[in-house]
Length: 263
Image (cartoon, rainbow, N blue to C red; front, side, top):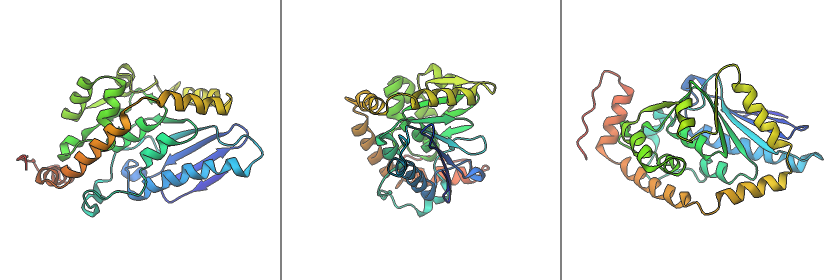
């Protein structure tokens, strides 16, 4: 099965049960527009619908990736002026990914920043290219990662690393992300694609009900859902500040030096 949505390409191999969702906005480094967020959800739902339309086992594992060498560079800054503070989509793709009934593997290469980083961290497993660039640079826009970026780093590494990354906005490489326990494995050009495929095929070959039980069990007891709600409230407030407007102005104009006033 192949399907092409406005900003997402979807494929499904009925024989293996492996699905792929490819974010396809390469001109913007696959930045998360409203349309892309919705299409990720629609693509995942389309894959899961195959369980009802085939006599085969249906979808067993999904690869989430970006087109043309980048995973996702974060939120689409061009839509910031259109976004009302506190008003979000009815369903966030982050939540859909985390609650999806089968495992989702993030195949990370190129830029994986901000909302793109949070998208990858919402997945069950992550494999990164050694030269990929991961980070939560929202501080430069007078914001914090609003969908759990700080919480994911705190959960998988520690709060000190989370503070450093979120306070400085620095990028780390795929290899550093592996050292920080933010990704499961890291590879160079020669082995990256094969490693993702091997992991995907291994999981797809296992009993689906047991895999689903593992996913549910591993997520038990995590307080990250409530902590992400806190960050969403903070993020919505910061979107109303003058410092946020100053940061967006500087992002749009490389020659502009922002002056943050704490207002």
